[in-house]
Image 1 (cartoon, rainbow, N blue to C red):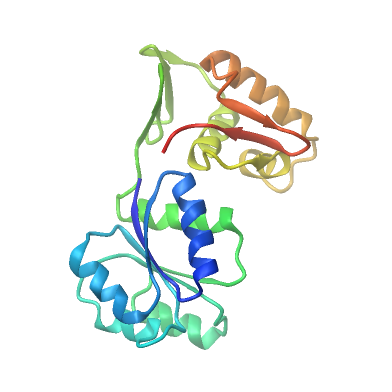
Image 2: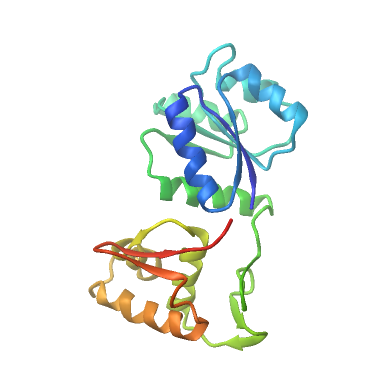
Length: 218
């Protein structure tokens, strides 16, 4: 997974973002002002920077203007005007997210930027199971298993959001889209099949009255 610098002066937001990103396997470092961003990138290599605009000592716009390292940047800020968005993107940001934000959306936007820069993991391994995310293939004990496109999309969603509970509605939205006319029992049926084929009965946990969570190490 990726090494991410979180440049956010609000410590509670910084901690919240860090904990959620570390749950899915990213390594995160915190910076609480603009000057600290340059201190960190001078000492460490990062795959991505989440950058607030309104920070002490040097704001996010100044930071991105003075950066010489080619590191993808996503602005994560309360400044949501069209002018600010356009300015941020023109200065070279790869995305612009306005607070308040949903963590699952943030993770998806991070994934999109990392994929664009070829920094996403292409495989996921857990015990005897290997998932080729790029090739969209699943193996158990080196044997290729047959999964429908919907089943693979559910596997992929659980892997990318591992250790985080996903509601049945969210899984429906991911695999079937907003316009699906069925009910959440469809998810249960597909999850039952996935568990059985992969031997993941104790890996994909049922979250009471919500949905499912894939329990895996980082």
